[in-house]
Length: 234
Ligand SMILES: *Cc1c(COP(=O)(O)O)cnc(C)c1O
Image (tube, rainbow, N blue to C red; front, top):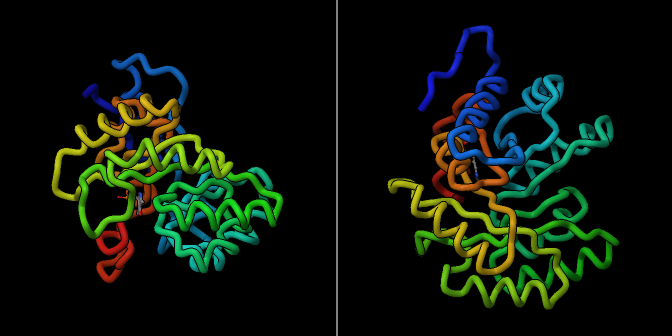
């Protein structure tokens, strides 16, 4: 890993951007991976500070929380892009389709059907990622790797705009094999986008071809201990 200038004058956003760049360099990766700023549990003021630095892609994992923060920001910044990265209940699909621009967590038929119906109703055609449970963890959302091909086909048949795959590797494992598996599954299914990598492993994800990295704490600081969203929901 080349030495990175982490001068104190660098903001966290500048630092993460620099680390993405340097992870790309040795792999000769072309096309900048998109940095999604994961603002869950953080106040609007923190989002605003990153907007002021030029960040436009944000991600949240709960519909309700995002609803309390983002509508005024979306009004003020029409080029803001909001990504849903957390599990989606079918009873929240209506709100999710109205609020978000990209969905990263499509993982079951019932949800895929509900999303398609609601998008038709609202006249929106949101890009969707299929979430794959690469570690086959029982408590984690996502389609199992051996069902990914069938599920991608089903979503396409429904008319969803499937753009890529997303994964959250097991907490206590080397993420690299999971990222590599996700990439293989995407290639096999003709999908070009890979949503993978978080604060602790986004450089590895970039080296393995991530097109979207989802970075929270490295940009916004650690979340509180009582935060269920981290280990509980991902
Ligand atoms: C919280 C979260 C992230 C970001 O986690 P950090 O470790 O804070 O970067 C990424 N992806 C998902 C799905 C998350 O829920």
